[in-house]
Structures are given as C-alpha cells and as structure tokens.
Image (tube, rainbow, N blue to C red; front, side):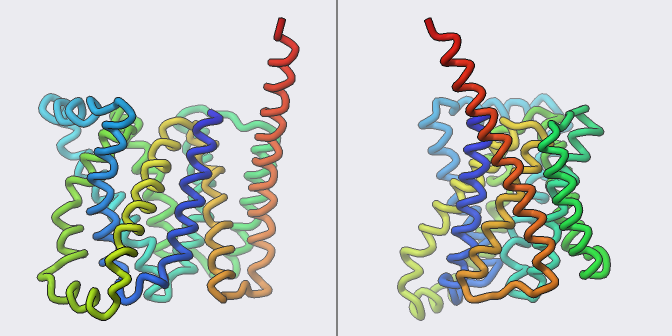
Length: 300
C-alpha cells in the first residue's frame, strides 16, 4: 500500500507539471497534445514492461483476447474511455470548460469511495471518513455555485470509475492491458498529432523548440499515466479515489503560478479539499510512525 500511495503521488505531481507546462506547447492544440501523448506512451510502456521483467503481460493479454470474447468488446471500450479522458483533460482549458472539468475531478474521488463501499465492501478509517466529509462539503459548495452538473463533470466523475471497474472485473488492470488500449488508440492518435503533416511542419517551423518539447511532453505524460494505472491496481478503490484529490490541489497551484486567480467564492471549496488532503497525509504519517515503532519493538 505504501508503494501504491507513492506511485499515486508521483502521478499527481507529473500531471500538475504537465498542466503547468501546457501553455509553453503553443501553437499545439488539445487534439495535437492528445495524439502525441498516446504516440509516445506506447513505446515507453513497452520499455517499462521490458525493464521491469513483466514483458509477458502483453502476450498474455493478447492470448486472452483470442480465448475470452468478453475482451473483444471490453478492450475497445476501455481504449475509448481512456482516450476521451486524455482528450478532455487538455480540450477543456482551450474551450472555456476548465471549471466544469475541474469540478468533475472534485467529484471523482467521492464516486470512487462510493463504488468501493458498494461494490467491494471497503471500509474507511475514521480519518478517511473525515476526509470524505470535508471533501463532500467543498464539492457541494462548488456545485451550488455552479448551478448543477454539466456533461463534462459527469464524464470525468463517472467515466473513470467505470473504466477502473471494467479493468478490475476482467483482470486487465495492469500495464499489459493498458498497452493494448493505447495500441487501439494509435490510428486516432496518429491522425490527431500528424494529420496530413502540413500543419505539423508549419508549427515546427514556427516554433523549433517543439522538437524538444514534444518528446518531453511524451515522456512526462507516459510516466504519469503508467503511475496512475499502477496506483489503481495497487490500492483499494476508496483510498485510490481519495488520493486523487492531490491532483486538483496541484493543478490549482499550477494555475496560480500561471497568473490565474481564485475567486473569493471558490476558497471554501479549495480549503475543504486541502483539509481532506491534510487528513490523508496525517493518517499516512501516523501509520508510518506506528510501523517504525512496531519494527523497533520487534527487533532482537
């Protein structure tokens, strides 16, 4: 579990770095960035599986595709779900829908906790329950100010739990399954990133720094996605959901560094989320201290 928490935090940190760096990728648009993220992720996930000694996960998943017909529908569906989320993450800021998508990320952990409780019977610790209550207050405040739910909120808050549920149920919640999903996205990603090549050549001529920035984006994005997928496998549904609150906090800090400001009416939401994250950090620190103490007592 400790490794899962660390991997989840690394994923959130890298997503925050990517969000902060996205304005420096101009004139790339949201669909361009989506395409390059997928194109770079496929070879890097392959390399990760080879280095980690888990190279059999890819042929194992492909073998299951031959024998388990459920995967014929599930794998394309999972690919579509993750593809839509990758696209939406960077489409929204470019089209004035960042607030709706960020609200979806605030709702997502609460939905994950609910799914963990109902589907898997997971129980929360007292501090985790306090974190959920604090987060629920913050999200409720934001929803009242936002006057209800939008399709972007629902797509994030319901799409990710459905994606992780399907992957766990069919035992494809590993990097081998993720690699197959990315490969299925390659035709769409190639069209989005390269197209007929003319627009890409114009952007590279206009901004030569993209020759370095695009591969850097690909590496950061691929590592973040791998960490996110691994954390979802290593942690309980509820804890993984709660830890995703670290990401919107980092995204807000990135937005402040980019010159944006938080409206006065938005502070109760962010303060409530910060309290939830602080409670999770407190619980993690208490568990670590308890583990060290028990280890010290059991030493000869």
